Every structure is written in structure tokens, then in C-alpha cells.
Image (cartoon, rainbow, N blue to C red; front, side, top):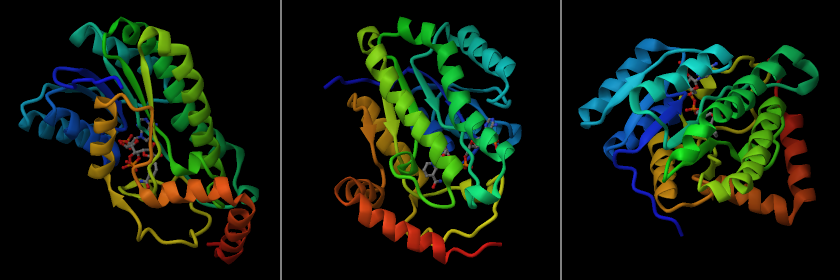
Length: 267
Ligand SMILES: NC(=O)c1ccc[n+]([C@@H]2O[C@H](COP(=O)([O-])OP(=O)(O)OC[C@H]3O[C@@H](n4cnc5c(N)ncnc54)[C@H](OP(=O)(O)O)[C@@H]3O)[C@@H](O)[C@H]2O)c1
């Protein structure tokens, strides 16, 4: 298995102003990586960079919207200006909406796909020539358990994370000869601001978040996977159990989820 040292690595991270992205930035900083961070909220981003510097790391920020192609180009140019390249690209920025597909709309679906899927694919396209020149290159895509098993009231999000997973698998095979690893991280429910940032909330979910794990745990497992050259991880064991149950007993899981959907209350 490939071994990778993250010390002095040039790392760019999207969605670094809160949650998993923030914890990833801090975890890379503790390993001695250089980090370039982005998200829309400039103040929060600056605070994360300041925390990274407290760990002795080099940390830079460029605030912007990852769905804007001009911004994506500027972000990659910033990495070139700073370090002449990129070793690790982390596609983490993400959003969601809760509600039945029939009661949602096209704009919500397209927005979620723009942030969770197209921003990641197009940022990666820009970064690829740089990654191919690195001797320890990796692309880290933050997916979800819902990219392995669709859940009710999350259809747009499921579509975006399934797309991210399929694209990650294709890309991994295409880039193997170039020495660029592709790591897909599929967290289950994680303690972050994610559910406060929903772009639409037309239903309450009929399950709680009592099984959520800390974002720092997701970040630490991600860095360990990168160091060990792994290609796929499920940081939350309950999520891994759902994926396994779905493979073995898909009909049973379908019926259980249909019951949960029926029990959901519209807002
Ligand atoms: N929390 C969970 O239960 C969970 C479970 C599985 C997977 N995930 C995945 O983990 C990733 C991180 O989410 P999180 O849980 O850490 O939630 P979060 O705290 O809400 O973080 C989301 C990040 O994405 C950024 N972002 C959103 N839209 C953006 C845009 N248009 N342009 C630039 N940045 C944007 C946000 O920053 P700004 O608002 O400042 O732009 C924020 O930094 C997402 O891909 C999510 O799908 C989360």
C-alpha cells in the first residue's frame, strides 16, 4: 500500500469555513501541510486559517463561491502563485435540502448538483495538470453514505453524492497511471452546521441525529486514509452497516425506508 507524508504537502480545501472542511484544515495543519482554504464566508475562513497558523502551518485563504467558474480558476491560480502546484485537492463544499421530490423544484435540484457535483468536477479538471506533476498527488472527495444508499426526503442530495461516487471511481482508474490517488470519504451523520444550512426544508427527517460523530473524527480518519493510500472510507460504522445491509437485503431496506418516509411530517 502506498504511504504518503503530509508534511509540507500543498493542500487546497473547499468548504473550509465550518464543519468537516474546518477540521480537515486543522488536521492538515497539525501534520505540517501548507493549506489554501476557500468558502464564501470570509470571516469564518480567516478564523480557521488563523487557527491553522497557531499549529505552525502556512495557511492562506481566498473567499468565493465554488459554483462560479471564474472563481474556481482564480482559486487554482492562487495555488500556483503561492506554491507553483498542488499535491492534495479536497472537494468538501456541500449543501442539501430536505423534502419529498414531488414537492421540491428544479432550482433546488440544480443548486445542489452545482455545489456538490459540478463544482468538484470542474475544480478538479483545472487542478489536474498540477496534480499530475506532483509526486504524492491525491484528490479527496467528500461523499456520503447517501451516495451509496438513497434515503427518502434527500433525493437531490442522494443524486449529487451518487454522481460524485461514480465519477470518483472512473477518475481513480483513469489517473492510476499518473500516480494520482482518488480517495472517496463517505461519512454518515456528522456534528456540523450542515443541517442549519439546508437550502430548503419542506419535511422533518423521521430519524434523529443521535448517531452523529464529531467532524474531527471524520477529518482524522481521512488524513490517515490519505497517509496509507486508501481509496475509500466510511468514517461512521452505522453508515457502513446500512450500506452492508442494503447489499445483502435490499428489499428489506426498501420496505423499512418506505415506512420511515410514510411517517415523516410535512412542515
Ligand atoms: N454533516 C453531515 O452529517 C454530513 C454527512 C455526510 C457527508 N457530509 C458532507 O460533508 C461536507 C461538508 O459538510 P459539513 O457537514 O461540514 O457542513 P457545513 O459545516 O455546512 O460545511 C459546508 C461547507 O461548504 C461550504 N459551501 C457551501 N456552499 C458553497 C459554495 N457555493 N461555495 C463555496 N463554499 C460553499 C460552506 O461554506 P460557506 O457557507 O462559507 O460558503 C461550508 O464551509 C459536504 O460535502 C457534506 O455533503 C456531511
